[in-house]
Image (cartoon, rainbow, N blue to C red; front, top):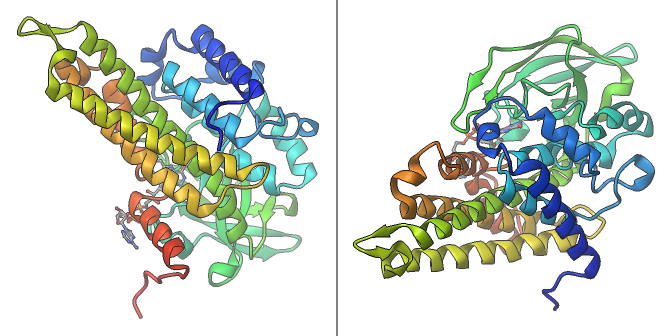
Length: 382
Ligand SMILES: Cc1cc2nc3c(=O)[nH]c(=O)nc-3n(C[C@H](O)[C@H](O)[C@H](O)COP(=O)(O)OP(=O)(O)OC[C@H]3O[C@@H](n4cnc5c(N)ncnc54)[C@H](O)[C@@H]3O)c2cc1C
């Protein structure tokens, strides 16, 4: 086993680090406190070839690996935490599911503006009565001529205020086997967004309402039977979630370290107090351990989708390590860490959301237990 980066990966990592230092570091505080999507960052990343990193070159991407995407995420997030969300939108989530399952006509239609950083796509999966139990979703696609009529609603959709296209999980028939997905564009007749509702991380989300929206055949992504494929694609989103939580924890760790090296109390530097040194030791161990689990999931994927069990383990570890690091960093920094003049408190709020988004910590533990015992455990009443 070799823990050193290849020359190619190191050069790539250094180039992203340089880009982040030049283009993202300045203005990171203002960017984090602006609720809207940072389009200027999207355009810079697109110009630098950082969107569609994992897409084949023939489809306008860079032909990179999931491992490289994780390396890039770490460099971007530790330079400008909010910009990590932009990298997520341009590589993980709906983008990667489209890359995996869209027809060539759909790719031609949707990828060009996404790759230029002019538009973003959002994932609309969660419903008022279908959160962790996502297979309870009720949004239905009913056959109508050559297409379908979409009826239902979605909640908690990240980037709902700014997305142009929504990857909507819906039901073509009964049961898990009846679930598939369609693409809905902003402005389609019968599609309405509710009022923006603010959340703890400073972003807002809008409920999505579908009232008899006509879905032509070319906007169907996966028909009934598509759920397992969608969740397989969603494991890439989970890797992005894990990478962000970990990198934001690392950001907080570095901020606290820099603070402890100069701040003096009782005539000594904070770093000289053993009670704080032990916090740093615990943060470092948690962050390094989680990083190894994340990289295992990413490397294991090679050019396929990552393994669900490895991703669940990595997401749980990265969410918990990121949270521990942000929380302890804030404690080490006292009032300065709590202040909105620095980004530690923002990272703490952001990581808290990542522990719920993309499958909660508890759902990750359920998935891990299934892998351990090699069987599924129904969470439903008899
Ligand atoms: C920051 C953020 C961004 C999000 N972005 C999106 C998005 O872009 N698109 C989208 O579709 N959704 C998004 N979501 C929604 C997210 O996927 C759901 O919030 C999540 O799946 C949990 O569903 P819920 O909120 O309905 O909670 P519930 O499912 O009601 O769960 C409540 C609590 O019960 C626990 N619980 C539930 N079932 C079990 C069980 N069987 N065993 C143990 N514990 C259980 C959960 O872990 C949780 O702690 C986002 C959420 C957040 C916080």
